[in-house]
Amino acid sequence: RKENPEMWERLFHVDHFHPSPHGTYLQGCVLHWALFGCGPDVLGAGNEGDDALIVDQLWRDARLMQPQNDDPLPLPTIEEVKYLATVAKTVCCEYMGTVAEVLQGTSESK
Image (cartoon, rainbow, N blue to C red; front, side, top):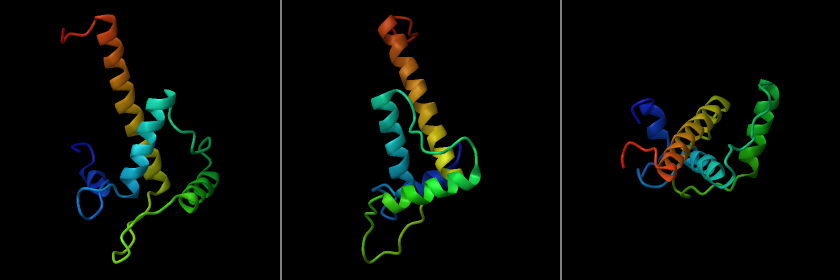
């Protein structure tokens, strides 16, 4: 929240409770890390043309659940997809490191 307040706001629908497409993508990245121990391999090796096609296909295949009477919320851009994937990786790696420390008995919070 502190690092990027604008992105924090984009994570939620206008009701400030349900996730937006940005929030849903972040949830998916975190879930992928939790289940498989690695992030989703969504984007290529940095070729922006390929990345644009991949992200476009990702959103075309996604199930969009937005209220009928509201304007559709924006979908994450390539840069936002990369940023959210990095946030998920950072949070999950920190959490997994903390869990490993606790399991090994090396945590300072004994």
